[in-house]
Image (tube, rainbow over all chains, first blue to last red; front, top):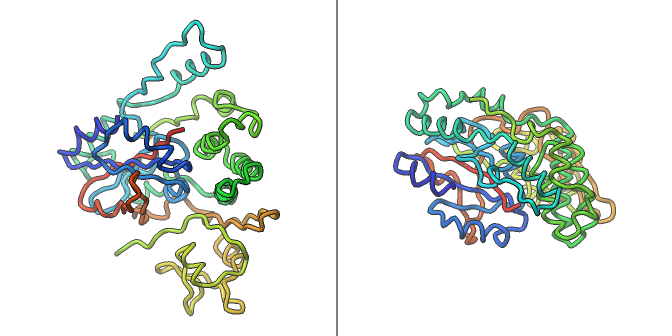
Length: 226
Length: 120
């Protein structure tokens, strides 16, 4: 879907850069990138640098950067269209957990039309667009970093390091600490689950549906402030 | 003005680190004023020619967590503010899917939409 958007907006002066927050590296991301056949830069962020540098806590997140390298919109949910899975209906033979996951995915807030309209407006009007924020507002809207979020980032980094050393059990303990300290950081949670593979249930004893319902479906993608 | 590489979390094997290693891991270098990154300095003196990581963490309000079994320490980002200290895009260099380094700043002169996504 990003390539489609790029085809529309590149001639008007917008480049798209996708960044895969994938500790599995290019191996994990390549099949998706290959399927998309992008003409834009497709980067790999194994260490989740963007989580910390920019304040990304879920995907997809979009950041707008103007021609001078100034951020005019900090990370926020960025859907150029509703994902296909959001309009699926559960099949009669779907297990109950899967069926409910599909229903919940449909109920998430995507705000795709509003986001796309705002993006097109900025591409057309640049700094004059009402969607381009002042520097002070960009900073204000970016994620706060209280001490527990700093500790969460350090814990997650330790988890990645230990996972890289094949210390999976201890890595999981640090990933769980990161989730405890910053419960609304879905990149930590979902990355940890992905790295656990077949051990996910044993190590974490939870799943996406349980956590989304616990934290609130309405909080998974917060409303866009447009 | 170029934006220095912003520090991300860093992993240490010891709380006392050689200055060159500390700079490589964090982007902060030893100056007469202490440890400095761009125009910012934190008043931390060397101890026996090594950087005291705990002192740096304390002075810069960063979390420092320790895994006793491995002996590793992880330094977190500075707390008390926001993820973005300014609207200047931090220097960001990452590999492409083909392994080539790419700096987002190379697109200066063009509007950019950065999209974070994941296979999971």
